[in-house]
Image (cartoon, rainbow, N blue to C red; front, side, top):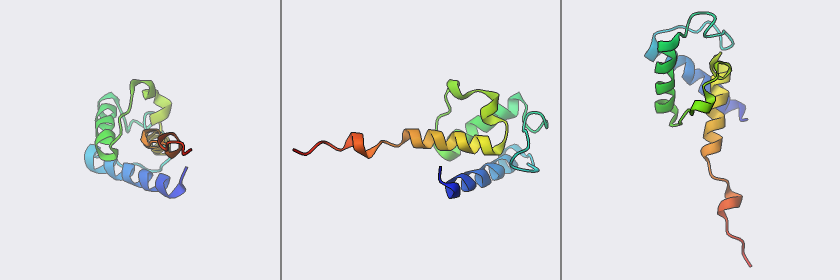
Length: 97
C-alpha cells in the first residue's frame, strides 16, 4: 500500500466527515462507533459520500463494522477497492509470438 496515497485518503476522509457530516475526528484511530461519532444514519451518509468522492462502490460484503471503525480502516478499504478496480497489465497484454 502506498503510504502517501493512504495518508491523503485519511486526510480527505477527515475533511469529508467535517464538511459533509459536521463531525470532528479527534484522531485517525478513534473508534467512530464507540465514540458516538457515527450512528446508523451518519454511517449511511458516509457510505454515499465515500462512493461519490472516491469513485468507488462499497459492496454489501464490506458492510462489516470493523471496516469502518476508524479513519485508518476506512482508508484501507477505499484503497483495496481502488486497487481491485484497476485492470492488471499482465492480463490485458496479449502474448506475442
